[in-house]
Image (cartoon, rainbow, N blue to C red):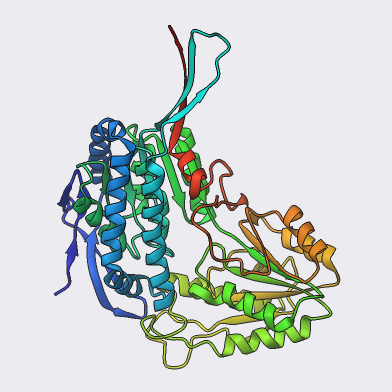
Length: 480
């Protein structure tokens, strides 16, 4: 019997008025239905916004330490359920077990982190020019936050939006991605059990065209945070700003790793393979371009191909690399592989569906060589385990190629030359820059966001920067 999960609105588990549901299937075996979720409408979303608006003032008046206590209790409940949450994430999204477990742990850590931060919010006192004036700044919540989250990190990204929003005193409406909404439902259940007041969090599943649009345009929401594709993100940004909302978008990437002449080819290949093939390439920070100095190019390619060909592919429960999340994502990756070959790139390895795994959404780790900077494979986000290798003559050319795309999310360099490393840090057009490390992987207490088409470039996520988005300052002149 397949379980049917309901929306969480105003502290209650409720079905959509239409009674319609959507199936979420296992990407490793699409014939297996994991659960059914509500196919909600704009009316359901509007009801959730009304509940959040009604609850917001009371939650804002709740002392920060008490808000922190609820977040801390939520983190503890998620920690108790880490194993089952990991299983659910694997079943719905397809990640390999170490990746899924790591993501669940990240969500736990985020709730603990912002639980502590909640007690520090309030404001600052400044020195006034007049002796009879108290001058201070109050930090207040913005209001009702609309959060729209993606499928590729179905628990970590909702957590890093939701925890600071709640810590700051905002109420929330949240639409998780339809491909893997289960772990967000479990976060709501944990918050409910931890004592979150009714209406402070509302989770509504369903299509973005109905639920997401209503969240963005409804007069009851005050700020919008979206993570997803650049194309949809631009639409969300336009809708939100037209409606007068504060908005934050984190979007796609075409992330490079520059491999310098001084780099060890085997070490560099290990860094690129981990960044490019980890999470089946389905990370906005995944390395999709290796920009390699001609002196180490051949050795690097040989090492990278060997790494790709030794990756164990299969269902995420017991293999190193799992499937893509859906048939559409798999088709998109295979289409880019065809385009790359038609444009003259050389398929060095991979490029197809692994033998014996054609029932799921599996694709081989793929490496292209002889890639030119203007090819689509070097310019557009693939969002699959595909790495394009480009050869350059020197550091200057490598830097130009790295910056020569519309995106600017994450970038790294592998080098033993500290001067090159310093220049790369200063001149790389990316919101995250790394030296001798893969492009993926983030610390939770520092800002995260991109340049150019990778972000709205308005507000950053995570750490203190994440709290900045969810708060607004009021300056007070108190004369006596």
